[in-house]
Length: 133
Image 1: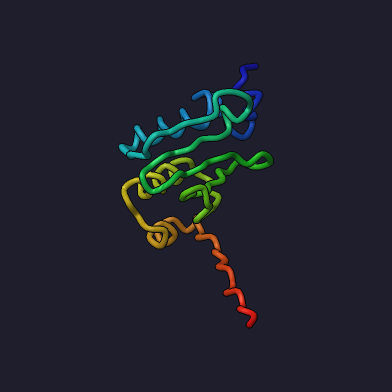
Image 2: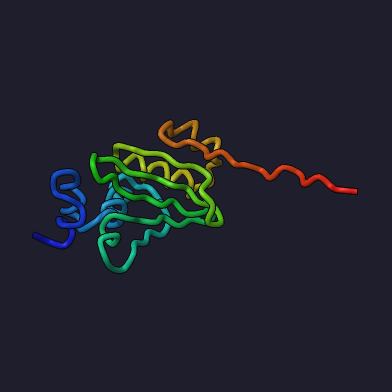
């Protein structure tokens, strides 16, 4: 059994095992559909090398991970390290299409409207501090 098949699980992700992990599968999917998803990276070692990918653009980073009990792709969209939107997609092509739209400059509102699996995260602003006189 290869390292990829051990890390990914052949039953849930046979297509990713064939491509030696999530990052190469995202690159191949994007290329096959002529999508520009930005620079794609993955951790250098360990199980995460096969199960995680980051897609970098000028707007922020799309972080993709895998479900462990069922087949789905967990997506976090981060700007300056803070999660701005997240979602779960069943299809790797949907993830690549969303990442390409983000890389091309789509706003969070445009992304969540076009890709219903993505949801903008709630931002909590700090309440003003009362001044004691």
